[in-house]
Length: 309
Image 1 (tube, rainbow, N blue to C red):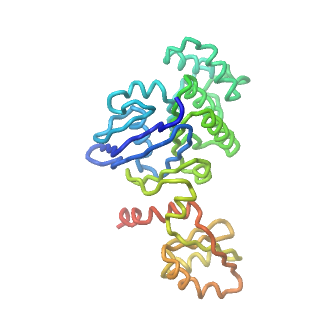
Image 2 (spheres, one colour; image 1 turned 120 degrees about the horizontal axis):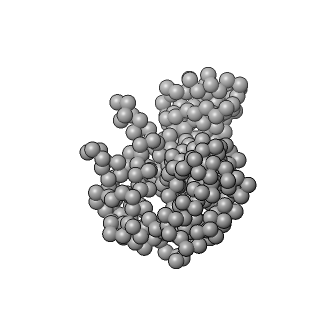
Image 3 (cartoon, helix red, strand yellow; image 1 turned 90 degrees about the horizontal axis):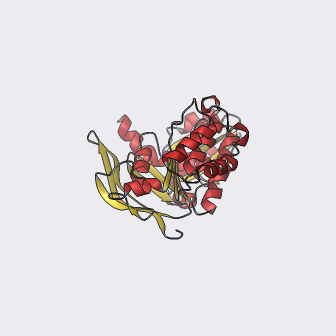
């Protein structure tokens, strides 16, 4: 199936022990796109993913996933979706090939051997196919998990923090594979804490404690934040950061190596607050667009105040 929406849900809510984890969640995801879910720990990302693929039932709300009703046809959604969990969930005393063959048996695949061969070849696992899963490094375990997820050729791939704990090269290889899958028509939803990974997505959704705070392309999210940022470089930016922390109009100061990101929601108030500091010859100030990380820190400010207050 091509074209249309892979996911179309409205008003999903879910509570555990009286605490609302997902609150009025609505989203429409076109087929063949890569969407990123971002947010702090406990923001509802994993629960939302499980609601979308039929592993959990919402307390309220409705919609479809891959054309199937999320309330009445969850079993069909599971057959056509691949879900990669945060925790490595394969048998460590079985080899890569044995694990994949086991997954193929679960799906009752007629072409089991061929499907396993193709997955092993696609993910570059041929030289390690007889290696026990428990002896693999993080990056190779990640490849095995992805191979298992795509074994039955799903239309939707749900990835829950898939690159946590792997090295930069493994992360880059992983994302190249994800975009190849999307180019072939697969829809991908991935939760991540990495800003550079978010920037690789067609669209992002930022969740905070069950509520969507922002959504759109990275450019749209940054533009809609109405955040204004200056980048400061110089010999002692850490000392300057301490001084700027209490200046009116400065909402956040972040150290990035030998530079600072100084941001505020009110452009005029920010400009007035930093004016005396811009007279110092030892620092260079440059107006800039806020980074995605700047924006997310800004979005979370009201929640941090609520939690610490």
